[in-house]
Amino acid sequence: MAPVADVDAMRRAVALAARGLGSTSPNPAVGCVIVDASGHEVGTGYHERAGGPHAEVHALRRAGVLARGGTAYVTLEPCNHTGRTGPCAQALIEAGIARVVYAVADPDPRATGGADTLRAAGVRVEGGLLAEEAEAGNAAWLTSVRLGRPHVRWKYAATLDGRVAAADGTSRWITSPESRADVHRLRAEADAVVVGSGTARADDPHLAVRGVDGAVQPLRVVVDTEATAVGPGARVLDDAAPTLVAVAEDAVADHLAGTDTVRLPRAADGRGLSVPAVLAALHERGVRSVLLEGGPTLAGAFAAEGAVDEVVGYLAPVLLGAGPAALGDAGIATIADALRLSVTDTTRIGPDLRVTARPRPTTKET
Image (cartoon, rainbow, N blue to C red; front, side, top):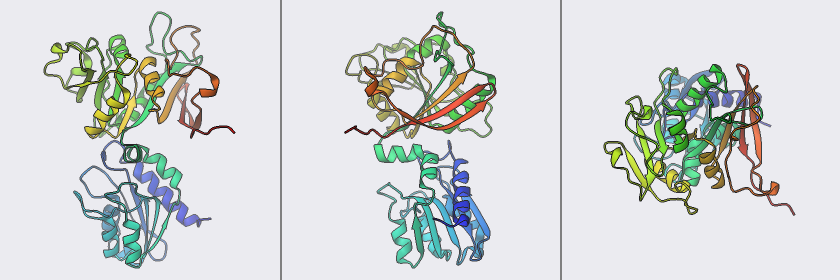
């Protein structure tokens, strides 16, 4: 079992890393805490923006000469390559750090090997401390490196009986102002916010971040297969944030001239666009995290492709008894094929309940 001091320092590093969410993409969110040889905290830092100094560099600058002989706690294995910034492993060595404790090994083949470089220089290195917590906080970047696509967080708001709208289609507002404000926090953490044509038609959504100081506006994406949902004057076409409209390869989209559009293949069943193609196009544009805010149809298409990495549901103490359910057809025909989730958090947001869950690893019964 790790010493309490190590756990406390790494947990502080994890909290620091979270401050960079939404501004570091396509780089990871990383936190670092440095303690001196006697165990006193002397420097902290986090990766604040892509292209800027890494977490270790910020922490070393604050620690100065007090870093010599000390320990660095880092949420991700220190990098071992030179990109827009130098290798952090070398910076730690030059600062005289005697011990490095990291949470998650770097899966990026371009940057891995930092631990080996440190050990070769005589630095004591330990990995895996609070790995699960650090992975959760850096899920978007880790997903993009491991799977070659953006991490997808599906957000929805529903009544307690699972309805996202009334029978007549009205849905404003099911949840409270507090929950809606919390959604803007999720938008601020994402590289892109994605909706489908149904949501674009019904709600004319704006999709930009409001009320979050210093937020980097995400890319607003409308999956408009037939190019019929986004027209002149749509709120998503204003200059508050960049916008991308994804349409089918054969769609007539002359009215979108001057709007950033991408033509993609249709799904194999002919309904909507290919989800893997949508994600690949976004990944190519540097998108590493997606907040999926589309309605039941789009959510069902992503779920059917196994492309939902996290679910955030806002449940309001409201009953409707009729109306569309939160999730559309996800290709699940029997209970044995149900997408099972593990709840990772439940929090009261005003009068509502926010439930966060992740898909469980698939296992076959024997």
